[in-house]
Image (tube, rainbow, N blue to C red; front, side):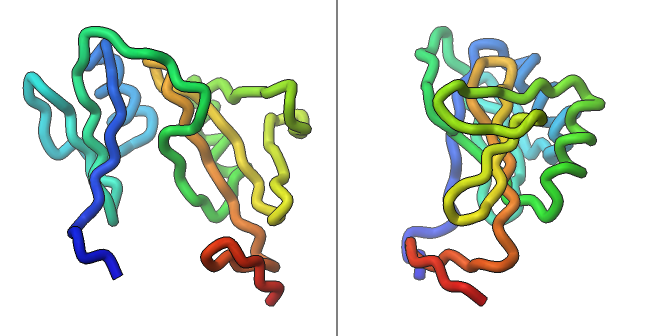
Length: 137
């Protein structure tokens, strides 16, 4: 049980107006506040705080992702809004850019305007992962 309280996810941006448009209009997240320091979005169980910074270093890993019911449906919807999906030479992805993880999950990546890597994950309905253990239903 979480005794610390409601989690907050943090992402940085050097262009606050582009970031707000992307998260609010493209990803359709609800903006809770916007001040000189950050733009805050409601992610349901957590809050996303996009910090306004003067410079930032690019990361090579995923910083935020969403579990989806139907990855193809979500990808099609986001593609219509201009999202371009990432392809990585070190992993085997299908023609749409979806990687099938050893657990059976399907994962796709895309970037926000600042180059932060985001993802969509459709879990394998045949398996449930609990604390690193794969349980076959």
